[in-house]
Length: 570
Image (cartoon, rainbow, N blue to C red; front, side, top):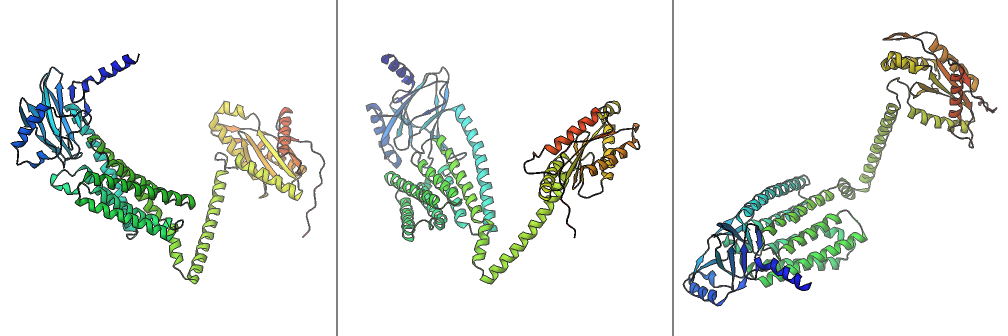
């Protein structure tokens, strides 16, 4: 079984054997770093003869060489592109034809990112050997169609991300100008990292190789600016000596990063990246410790910016593929957004108010507090008035103009509480319009609404006391609450309502309509051990009895005798 698996693996790897690549229509994008092989004797001899004849080209003598054999297995001519991510260090690429070596011409693209590209044309079943320097060899092999598609996609993404970055920078700049330049550190931090992006993606001139190590001082300076923002918050959890040690460490890191501009050496570059990454991780640890000891919302964007800087530092270790360079936009976009959030937190109105109050004299602070108190009291009074108006508006039944069921529920429980406290009787009348369904069926719902509106006006006209409330209970049912009213008084009000409705017909668009009402009445003095729904249930049962006994009548709910306390004489 193991032999079968090993055989299958070998079959899969045959098209990409060590030092050889067989190309077909299915190959779109191949990484080349692991496919190069050392020069054999024939290639080494041919290269030696070629280099001896090119004494004026110094670049051909630096670094070891390696080879790659590429075969077109198709029955037609194929076009392929070899790409090199860093266009500032263009590697010479030689094609062996017999015993001769011919330089392969290349072209540099600036947009969507600086890339040096070699065009390789292979005839049907043709094989070519490529010789290239080890340090700056092409890293990817593309089919022509796939390379064009990727360029279009990368261009669209580039425009989108640049638009987002520009919008964030303009917002940050506007906010900084409105604050009088108080967020200059974060604005400079954005500018440094945009320069970092430009240096890594668009600089393609080989004469600017001095700036190959520019990301190091940019990242180090960004870390110093970030510490300036974090220091006021870290001062609450760290001693002055610890803060001074961190500042000295970051300044030393910045100085070393600046010296790397004058020493273009890969070993020194990697060492500086490690030092930078260690410094970023250390500052992140301090911020996490400070957030744990004394939480403030400022810590979150500060930690986020640290993570973005760490991500940008890690990308500098291995950034040899063209497809990887597009990822540099993402941490930079996040960094700009977090810097804007941090600026907004620093410019919060509460913080500005506290700072201004700290600079006031005691008399000014007292006067300012008194003025703020008076303003708050006035605003509270206005809010209470608006709240009451809103409650009144929400308590109206829009068809009849009476109070609605929500108002009745609240009023009912308030009156029960008052009845318990004052030991006064509370009466409830539930009214139902007789045979109202027949009115709707015969004349239509619009006429039924006119009947409801006319009946509601007659109900409302009967009530004289401001404390009495009439509400639309639901459909054709209405409820009347009569505080401080005994059963006999409630029956008198109910009789007035019954006569008011029956005395004359209701004029509608369909003509005159005669209606009557049935009413159930209940009265009680509420007590602590009485169910709150008892009064409501008693009135409802009385209404049911009135309807069963022929309608157009009043029925009183049976109640136990109760004692009503006399009101005090003034």
